[in-house]
Length: 109
Image (cartoon, rainbow, N blue to C red; front, side, top):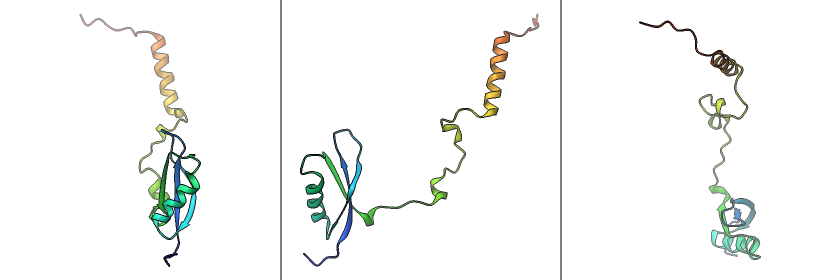
């Protein structure tokens, strides 16, 4: 070998055109060129992949800070949990008013 330290490369693959990229695994290699050869051999020799991404693990940014991952504003209305009790009450009131028909209005003449 070239005497270079081994580094971990993460491999992502796409099985078919239009499909998602998925993590396939990782491999050890001294450089990107050899990592590319290894990845092609491990994940492409049987034509089980149409695309490979080979990324040095050191290049992957790890974001796990809960303060950065939580939205700054309350966006609970976007979750498919349904309407809140307050919204349900307002909807019921609006439906009841609609079912009651038009209210008696005074003719302005």
